[in-house]
Image (cartoon, rainbow, N blue to C red):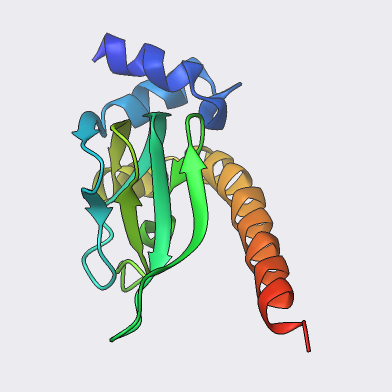
Length: 152
């Protein structure tokens, strides 16, 4: 567990996290390895983890029946994947497919939600970190939509 705690503290998402909170989060963490083409998760499946990318790349995709998947973001080392674990009904709203060998730390959602409920300071720290990422990704998606549909 100390190995995972050290890895967490080195990840940009957890930079400046207190030692106590790092230990709490590490208790919910585990290592993952995915080959290119494998999925971290699929749309509609339970959002039971979020992921810290340590190595590799993950494409976030929207799939429409009869169409090729639309990649709306590609994330890499130092980034996080997944926020659907934060909001009921805790289901993924898109696919996350590895485009290269990817190593990630998965954080168990139920475990972390329980710890946030017990320690509201931990929950607040996590929200302060998730919210700017979500806003930035929403803005990036908005710019993509303007680029695609704004040309007439």
